[in-house]
Length: 167
Image 1: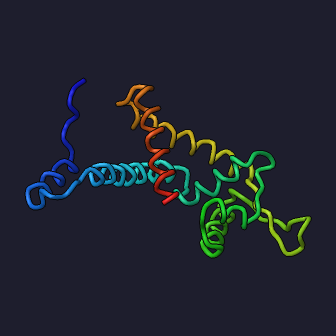
Image 2: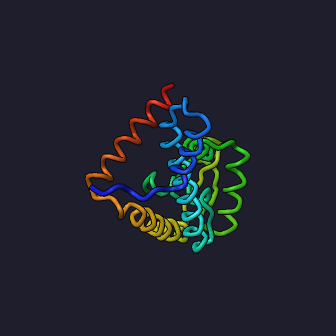
Image 3: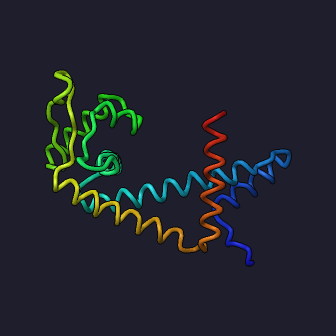
């Protein structure tokens, strides 16, 4: 197996080693790369979704409705809880998506004070196309890894996330 090319994180680690050789920078090596990867992929995903007239945050709303299955309907409270958004933040996203014709809000037939949010046909089409475009980008980013490496990376990240969230 060949040694991977050095990256900007390696340069940062080298600099710390020169001025603070007492530091164990292993965590910085991992999280520096995770942060850089997250930023790079987030920017790429934002551009991919922009082709469909939506932002990443708006995609998240549409995708949550889509994943809920037919009739692609949830309450604003369910959406807020799933996306970890305040009700104010959710209202802004819903307003924009409703104006774009991608979802509709209607009274909840079981709760006079409640609302239901439902994907429109146009919203369903947009989210299905956007998820395909996003997955194509993510798949291309993983193309440097074989299936076993990608599976192992997913497992390691799952373990790291679980230990971080538990702590």
